[in-house]
Amino acid sequence: MIRDVLFKYWGYDSFRPGQEEIINSALDGFDTLALMPTGGGKSICFQVPALSRDGLCLVVSPLIALIKDQVQNLNSKGIKSLAVYSGMSYQQIDAALDNAIYGDYKFLYVSPERLQTHLFKSRAEKMNINFLVVDEAHCISQWGYDFRPAYLEIKSIREIIGNVPTIALTATATQVVAEDIINKLGFGEHKVISTGFERPNLSYVVRNTEDKYGHMLRICNGVQGTGIIYVRERKKSEEIAAFLRANNIQADFYHAGLSKEMRSYKQDEWKNGRIRVIVATNAFGMGIDKPDVRFVTHYDLPESLEAYFQEAGRAGRDGKRSYTTLLWNNSDIQRLRAIHNITYPSMEYIKEIYQKVFIYLNIPYEGGKESVNKFNLQEFARRFSLNSVSAYYAIKYIEQEGYWELTDEIDNPSKIMFTVNRDELYKVQLGNAQLDVFIKSLLRLYTGLFSRITQIDEAFIAKTTFDSEAGVKDKLITLSRMHIIKYIPRVRTPLMIMNYERLVESNFYLSQKRYDERKDMFKKRIESVISFVNEENICRSRQLIAYFGQHVDNDCGVCDVCLGKKNSANPAQARNAAKMAIIGHFASRGMNITKLDHNTIDPQFQEMLSEIQTIAGDNYRLYLDVFREMIDQ
Image 1 (cartoon, rainbow, N blue to C red):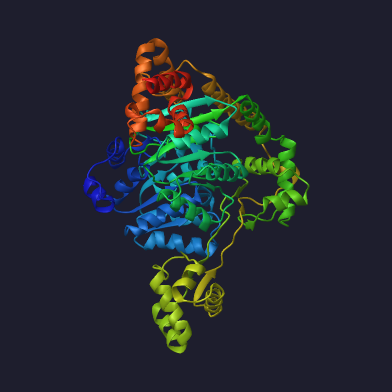
Image 2 (image 1 turned 120 degrees about the vertical axis):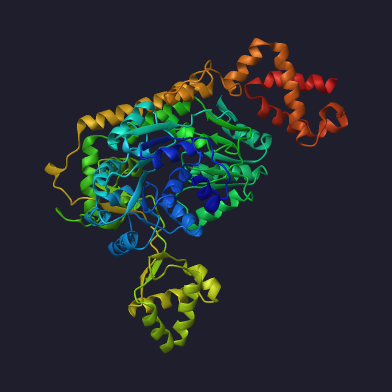
């Protein structure tokens, strides 16, 4: 049965490791916590059982962009799906929830903040839900690296929708976090299924270097295939991409400050191989299915091993040899420790920011509950002469306490929905020839316009109808004024959603104990990263697996630590391994290095040295010695 579903909708004959066990656990009625590495195929673990049973699957997910992508992908397969998330209007949410109850839909994706509303809770009682799915389940734990307080509301939703099996999924949960997930979700009879954190095809390399640019260039030149370079700052992503392009590497940058169209364009260019290397902030990669990434490089130290493991894990999902390199120096450690204090400003400062946000939004005391407001952080900081970074972290801390939500979504696309039935629309078309042509175009380009709020792109409509974008907008406004459609124009700004009314200073409560615990946990995660890069005697893979509370008996054999040990233990074997690696590397370039003479080698000697340094890493001196010996022979 489940294999039939898998083949029907995805075209696969078999499941990946762990998927079938998770699916059967859920179908047998167990609450299930699935621990799967990035790229392990988490979505299939809940989509297949949901399609195997009558009813609607309720999916809680924290990322709006990922929600939209998954809903779009499911609908493209003919699986009726819809979403409710922060930033939608009351009317949009109302229509979506009605469709979830009466519209024969299979999946309803919800951002956790929407679970708290009276509207959602009252409608959830009427839904025929077969499974509750909690994606990125580590967000429910304050001991996790990405705690989101709205996730705590999920347990109360379980009481409303009845005793349906819950499937919680995460790629990054320590043992403490896994136990917290089970407790916070109120699991009954349950199973914990882990597919393991080993990635045998992935070579973890850590490099202490002052020449990060040179190292990145050698990696790009020495490793064939596509890659990702992760950086902390948007500006740095642009600078590094420019540097790589200047050195003949097909590279581009990606960060959350770009428009949705530009992000989508660059993502597609990279996925399709027209951009070889993408230099990105951590806004890149979530939900992207590209199995043939050959290398991931971290230019900056990540703030946690959870984040590092998830980002590094985007390499080599096809099972082929791939590399992940973490570049660092002592200055990085100082900066990482400084982030600790920036991320957790004083309690007094946080309370001050709380009131200033409401002043900025012109919201009076006891007002603003469930309001959706445009919020420009830079403008806010300028108005009150604040450091924008410090203000941002204060706002995010208040968000963790559940008082509001600041969306990272800077581009909310235009949306429309017909508010008349087909018969009424036909009468309008008969009476207006110009609008008749336009309405027919809308119905041809988009499906579901009568049943749900649908995203549209005015520029795309203009291109396909040989009209101007302004002309399309005018027609949409005309139809809106005639009460034929509901038209919500695009908004390009972050949104601040207020979960509660504005409180007076004396009623705005923040727990000092919880603040201290979170700050201490953040510091421990930072120190774990620092210990990881400084440890030169324990296999990198074993270190990561141990961090997540698991144990393996064998070293990986391919990380920088393991390779260093091999060379030290058997010099003759190390020289032979270096020789084979050099021959194999240049053979992949179509060169038989054992038959080249000086006339062939001399013009490209420096380039060859650069490539050898890439494959040698810390063993460069050994490889260089072997290379010169081969040339002399």
